Amino acid sequence: MNTTGTGRVEGRVALVTGGAMGLGKADCERLASEGAKVIVTDREVELAHEVADSIGGDAMALDVTDEQQWKDVMQAVQERHGGLDILVNNAGNVIFETIEDCSLDHFKLHLDIHVSGTFLGCKYAMPLMKHRHKTNGGGGSSIVNMASTAALMGYPMIPAYTAAKGAISSMTRSIAMHCQDEGYGIRCNALAPGGIETPMVRDISGRAGEELMKIDPGPLPQDGLGDAHDVAGCVLFLASDDARFLNGLTIPVDNGLDARPHH
Image (cartoon, rainbow, N blue to C red):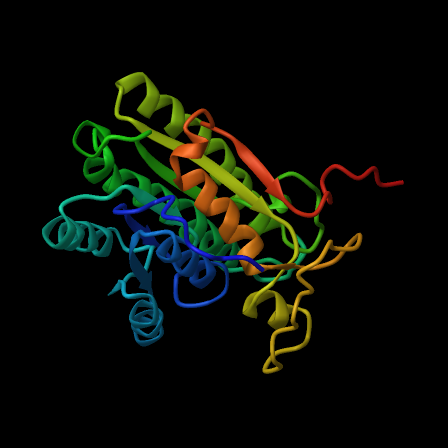
């Protein structure tokens, strides 16, 4: 898989939540390879520092459900980096339960991590991201929220997760239009990944503790799992000026899963 840097986000400051592993780690690596200064945030702060050290970035502890931690992180970003150009709201969880089995606590947990976490990230990052184009040039700042094909399709075993991801998709449109109406120079889009080989997918598929599968770099077969860098490449695109005409979208990254008729 080609991740050779060409400087598409050269000099930009990026923050990724849940950046210590899986999709978040791949996002951090790809953005850094294209010239961004990446701030890796995660509850697993030691792992976040490992990722940051490997890409020449910064690392901070962050529980995305904690409003005060968001305020503290954004204050630190402002002091250390002078602003923010790219926000990737990636942190997430999933518990497999039908609506009959899912407790209200588990339902609220999904909403806290996915919906409240994304809301807080957008809210407190926005003051650092608005009008950056006036000093930096280019196509403006970019927020990338992580939805899921679960927001687009009916999966019976994850009602809390689907509710949370659907809310992210809707909230993304609202944030995009607000920023455009205010002239902030901030775009906001969401990605909806399908099955990607990550530690979370490995664990829920009964392969906990095993090495992640190597995903062939060639064309993928129907129902084939993707690699985390398949999503990271799309994050990079949305973060770059190449995507300046894309705003308020939820884009499936799913090898055609959502497009394929099901009988």
